[in-house]
Amino acid sequence: MKAVVVFESMFGNTRRLAEAVGKGLAETAEVRVVPVSRANSRLVDDADLVVVGGPTHIHGMSRPSTRKAAVDQAAKQPATVLDPDARAAGLDDWFAALGHLEARAAAFDTRAKAPAILTGRASKGIDRQLRRHGLRPVVDPESFLVDKANHLQPGEEDRAREWGQRLGRSTEAS
Ligand SMILES: Cc1cc2nc3c(=O)[nH]c(=O)nc-3n(C[C@H](O)[C@H](O)[C@H](O)COP(=O)(O)O)c2cc1C
Image 1: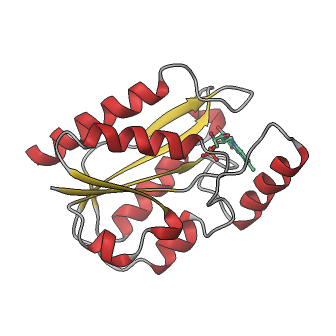
Image 2: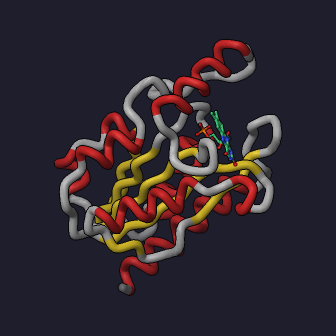
Image 3: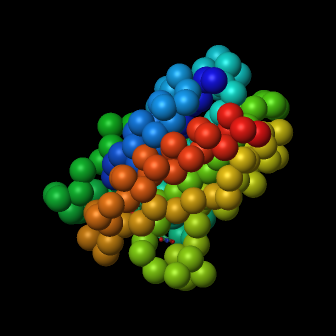
């Protein structure tokens, strides 16, 4: 089985989780983990499983204005480092250019640790976009949590790896 994990990340949290999901998937699949700017159609067309993750911005998927706000935030806070691909296109641009695909899929996000009704979840929008493009999610959208200082909560990378393991097994069985 071939799997691709496509991620958008401004501050690096979703990148770290995407890499952890990729490690979990590697037990059952040949995996590529790529930022959205490098997720070309050849890579995605070839995949049996397409996993897409991004940060929650203003209760949903990021958009140009929220990505700009993240860049501005990083400029003001020296402790916040922008991901190398942060200034590239977002998942919204990528989905807009994506054709119809037949593969299986899964969505995840990062968001603040608080009830989802308050934070919103980018993974719900990602899941909707996956279905719109013909992809078939095999698991419910998943969230991984950061604290108020925008650091991953302890254990979230392990949980992402385990989620990737289960996702690989569910995909094989479906
Ligand atoms: C402009 C902006 C808006 C945000 N809005 C939300 C939000 O509505 N809900 C939430 O839970 N987190 C929100 N966050 C926090 C991010 O989801 C969180 O920092 C995430 O881990 C960032 O992932 P990244 O490091 O991959 O960019 C926001 C962050 C930024 C920069």
